[in-house]
Image (tube, rainbow, N blue to C red; front, top):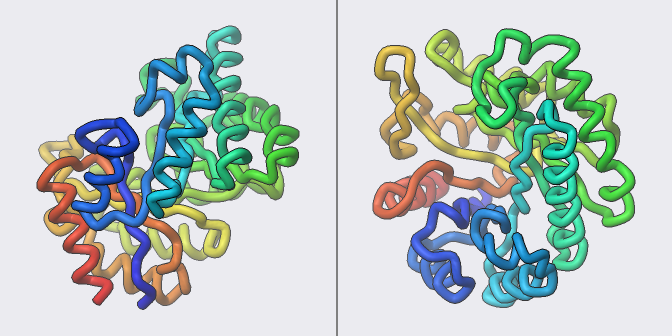
Length: 277
């Protein structure tokens, strides 16, 4: 198996100044980060200080800390047109930063018809919601083409793009600059978690080489609620996940360990390193 490229979300670490992010990443043995500039550095982001944001990113890169994704979290189906335009402007800022800093990938989930509450809506999986997402993301095609940048779409079971099939349908319609983040835990809920192996195999079969980023997280169920736990402790067997990825020759794809911080994050990174040996 290839040496795994392991990262975390920058905003899950203790401090967001570049120097401290670098130090913390080194302590954890991380190879890179998933970076949401509006979360990590809200003041220069809100002040539209693009040069400061780019300089911060380059500080991380010069310390050999890769940026595996510029996370542009937004809801492309938001009902407030003015709010959606501001969100699209943030994605375009990330595309510009990706171009300037030679990162190459930005990405997001696809939200919900519940606007600011990204939760299950009875019509999330319908044709109207799908069309809204497609329309919004299609607006980014010229920006992505100009920057030579790709947009990674992540499916989440409660969101509008919710499974392998809906993601394949969307990306086929949007074209070459739209690729894939695979987050297995986000495809699962109380109804289907027992079938995670079949769900993963189907996703790998449909998307395979279009996958550019892996999100690893784990959970247990309390009733029907998912409760986040360390990678070694939940309902998904990540040793088996890595075997399935190796069979598809995907262990070179960077991994972001999500929804953990502190000692729980350290233990999960160490667990992945042991598995890769």
